Length: 131
Image 1 (cartoon, helix red, strand yellow):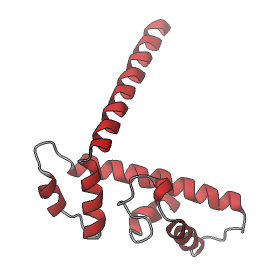
Image 2 (image 1 turned 90 degrees about the vertical axis):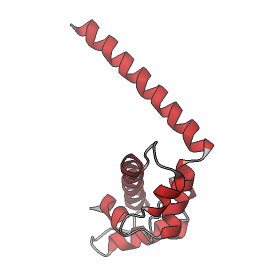
Image 3 (image 1 turned 30 degrees about the vertical axis):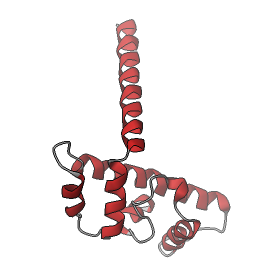
């Protein structure tokens, strides 16, 4: 429930930010307050920290799902920018698409792919040793 608030409340949990840590503290506090409307939450910093960690994880997963669904190698940046999903503000969508086409994003994606390849290789070696 807590993480899903992020998907449903785009005005508090914008996809335009490239990193969760860059999201304004006011928006994060709005998410905590929004969650408190549904649950009785003690005024304990630990619980609020857990809420933000949960939302951050779901936010990151949501952005990954969006990129998997909309970012296609055969489409131009302009074509993707025009295909705004329902519920998104155009400026947020354009900011995220702009980031997808940036050199920083491309560099990061290559690093993730190399890391995933290394992990798969280590798993295969570990499985062979077990057999």
